[in-house]
Image (tube, rainbow, N blue to C red; front, side, top):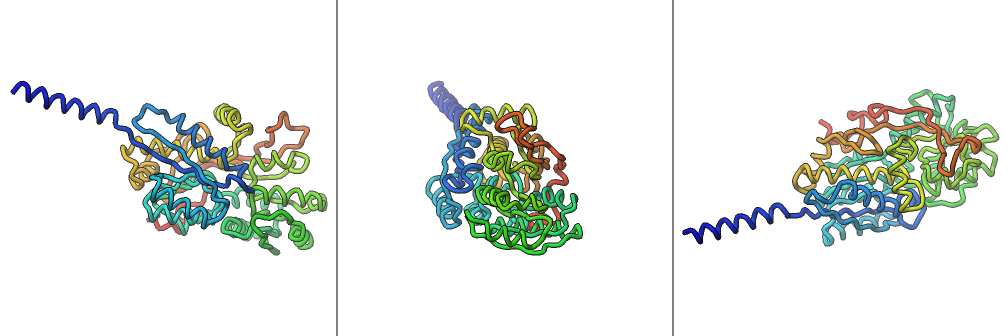
Length: 397
């Protein structure tokens, strides 16, 4: 009897030890543009940001994390094939980043179908938390509604009543023009014209000449990354701003301004939700990032860090990596990280935090290579993003 009792006790002990040391294995795929016009604002930097999130989450919580990455080349079919392979055969639990709204909308649908988690930082379309919202998607960093009301609203308030749009001809550009035009019209302004530009593009001269001849007070650039850089450079060469028309970069990143140089970009007004030089915490984290990459982080890369860190906290709190349970926990738990501060994820999947209206410094105002912005205004979290009841999300009761 004693021998049997000893064996049972030993088995119980082994089972308890097995439970104590059981590891939950989480696999996160960072999918983005690693070779094209968005590679500077996403690319390998987003992978580094995800790795920093894993590092800061800590390895002593019974959760092991593997980060994998792939290049979707800004093509929905390629992104979709990668997502299905990751989910079906490679045991990926969550996909992060995914710039290029057309790709993101495809990944949004596949993630819902496969009941996984989509942590979007790179794509802008506000449809991800509107008509296309999903119980499996978190939209972390920024969106077209927020950009339109930040930059577009500021330009209208400053007297820019007539607009002409240069719009990247895919889901992101269309959404950004739509959301900005709504802001312009609501303020009594007028859209006098727009032109759809090939994506990606290099020569914007004919489109800029159309915008110039329209006489619009504001030329709205509903594009991003390399397209924005080329548009602004060519507008400068044509003397468009010297002629009195304003350029509104509706989605501009610090990396774009760095590439343009302050001589060309000075005075540009833009909206971001993250800038490396906001406070001591953002400066410290950005120094870690720069040590690994050789440059400061973009808003998108910062968003990958914040989203992945909150996801891992939710996996720990939920005690499972089941997608529905984890996303529910992400929405239930307040968010808190060194880059975006305290915030929340709404029922529609929209992450809420402050946004900032910046103006690009003149060369003589800058104290260093990455000293690019002066803060014009802080847009509080409850004003920065579309009201919950206006998006048409099926999850909002």
